[in-house]
Image 1 (tube, rainbow, N blue to C red):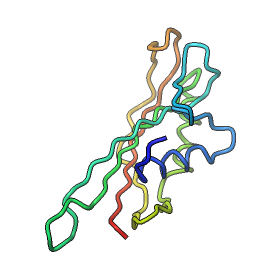
Image 2 (cartoon, helix red, strand yellow):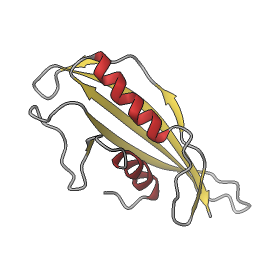
Image 3 (cartoon, rainbow, N blue to C red):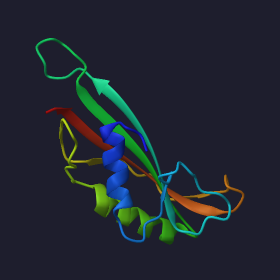
Length: 135
């Protein structure tokens, strides 16, 4: 797992949901064509924007989690996406040495078929944002 506190916060919240299989798993594995459905894949990117400091330093952490909720059909993908939403939306995660703001939901296009693993599944992609300041 990444040592970035934003990625750790996102992944910890998702992995804390009972029965929700989250990838990459703690060993860094990703799903294959034989992975049991449903599951979630979370890819997290973090950038540091200009913070509200007098010395004009980039201290505002802005993390985006691109979360793929994968199921056998569109209904299963949406149900899994609902579990993700319940785990993340409006949560203010504890982050060492950071003051976090509530997690926001930025985008959610419709579930769509995906055959990238070699079998047909449905993928609901949601974008979540977590911002923080030093603290």
